[in-house]
Amino acid sequence: SSTLRLILGDQLNASHSWFREKNPHCIYLIAELKQETGYVRHHVQKVCGFFLAMQAFAAALEKAGHRVIYLTLDDTADCSSLPQLLDRVIEEQAIGSFEFQRPDEYRLLEQLRHYAADLDLPSREVDTEHFLLPFDELSKEFKADTAHRMEAFYRRMRKRHDILLENGEPVGGQWNFDKENRESLKPEDLEQLPEPLLLANDASQVLKRLERHQVETFGTAQQPLIWPISRSQALDLLNYFCEHLLPNFGRFQDAMTRQTQQRWSLYHSRLSFALNAKMLHPLQVIRQAIAAREANPQRINLAQLEGFVRQILGWREFVRGIYWANMPGYESLNALAADRKLPAYFWSGDTQMSCMQESLGQSLEYAYAHHIQRLMVIGNFCLIAGIDPDEVDEWYLGVYVDAIQWVELPNTRGMSQFADGGLLASKAYAGSGQYISRMSDYCKGCHYRVSQKTGPRSCPFNSLYWDFMLRHRERFELNPRVAMLYRNWDRQSEESRTAILDQAKSYLSRLESL
Ligand code: FAD
Ligand code: SF4
Image 1 (cartoon, rainbow, N blue to C red):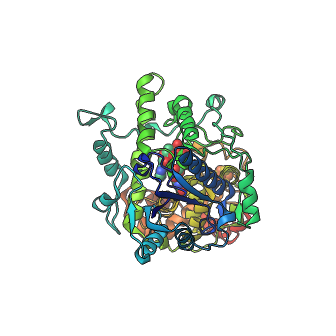
Image 2: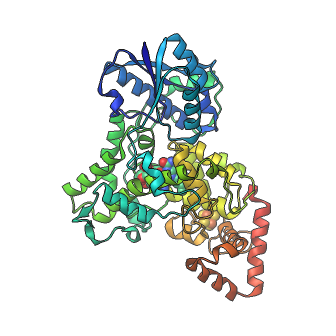
Image 3: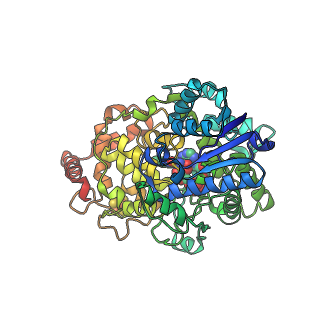
């Protein structure tokens, strides 16, 4: 009898040891399922990206001589859940054993483990062979309810994988060049910005299926789809990055601009979708970036390369560790007791705050925003306005093409909303309009005035920032990095402090109309 091997939408790893041998008794199952389109409302490009990539992966496996069953929404419409579908396929194909790759999402891991435990057939769970810290070692590095810091972890990972080291010491004499990664874009820099490499994948059939099965999505459809759906397209994107974007990656990593209709991703790689769907292996991405610098050290300096390596070898693996150490409790943490509703403009981009309009608008149009837009504009707004982290999470999990819970949740609830009370980050990423003004040109031409803290046209970020800092004074004052801010606040006149807090109150009472 045959073995059924399940491949989930984010398990498109062509180098997995499963595929080393062709076995006629092995059937691979890849299926579009309503369960996966419905656990949260997704951006339409995210659903199209996953379905097209799954289809391309199935076709490639088949071409390589494997037996594959690909089921579309049309075929699975009567299966409300993954276990139901598995039961059906196991019966239809007279399957004798079941195997699955360990899901990276807690929800799916629980579901499949329960399913396998209750099954009358032998079953096996195997690793996805993707991450740089093995799953069984996560618990050695990460403890539940314990604060961890990325930098120390990152150094251990550099050593473990021998990345950017020279005789055991960091190349260039320091581990981290983050301080060199904080430039904003000047007018002359804007002219040099390269356009993003956009792919052109026909999504028309998937779009029709989504309509036929009344799958609720949001955002702009973008037909053809601009995201990579195969390993070879993902490699094109990686090559493009190493050639055109890496030379300035670190330098403008935190910069934001509205002047870039065609150049909305600046020097970012846009590789997150390909990485998270496992079309690319993180070590391959890192090695290729290192090779690009070795081939052209004049053009790509160490700070650019190290900044990029840190995101993948450091942050990406680190947030995964925080996730697994703290799930399932992590998804309901709300340390700051934030409880306001997410304003409607998160779904339309229709707000007078130019920074939010640009960042939300871009997210809705391309299912993408870069890290600082996610963290210091949209996330910062939710943090200081005290939006319920459940609502914030739901939005982030739906909107971005790369959003899978293991990476979305720690970034959103932890790093951006501080709802874990500091397990992931040592301080809350709260900022006033000054930060946004320094790192972008959003404030020029905004309805609001970034120089003002009070008054009807004052920048909402300014007063909301102080209201937030004072709401949580007891907690944050303990941090010596923040204590200074409170001393400056106390030095202001009573009158000006009251005016700022009154302004915040007024904005909070009409968040929907900002
Ligand atoms: P680049 O800037 O080119 O960086 C290269 C790669 O490094 C990325 O592709 C990504 O794989 C990795 N990386 C960088 N920063 C992080 C990080 N903080 N955590 C994990 N990996 C990182 N990333 C996701 O992949 N999925 C998410 O759902 C997601 N949600 C986020 C939510 C919030 C509130 C914040 C602040 C960040 C989130 N991130 C998420 C992290 C980061 O913003 C994205 O990985 C990045 O913007 C993707 O674009 P890029 O590929 O062009 O990244
Ligand atoms: Fe955003 Fe305030 Fe600047 Fe307007 S003035 S773009 S609201 S930071």
